Image (cartoon, helix red, strand yellow):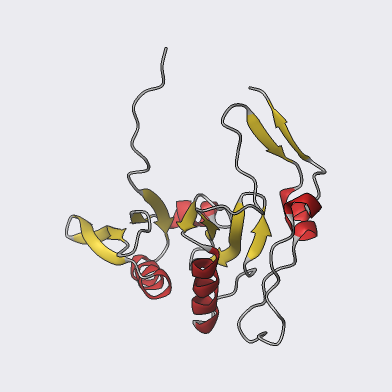
Length: 188
């Protein structure tokens, strides 16, 4: 039996404790724009947001209990087209006073982790284009990555955060120098 026809992700929905606060955060931090408001008995309960520059559709739903239970988890990762774009995003977030872990080298691209929205959801970003320094998952089988945080930290240091301009931005390591420990391909 063949796989069913699918067409990407329609939208991502997050539970929030304060709809106005979360809406403002996604608008001001990431550039989202409200597209649809959902009212129940004349009370605003949700908003669907679109991104003018390629981000996924995002819906926010007023649900304080689920928002509290979901805090701390990274339900999705937003794609960013390049290393330069992810560095620009990190600088923007820092300028807005947002704490994050900085741009880091990772196995399959550059990652910007540890950004938290007002409800504590971790919002992550990953580059969608890889370079010769990153690994592509195999066409068949599975790329197994053990201890991904440790492997990426061993491969390259964190990118400097804004205000650390005196530290040069390191180039990614030579692919031959990237530790292979823990990275193996397996057939499925």
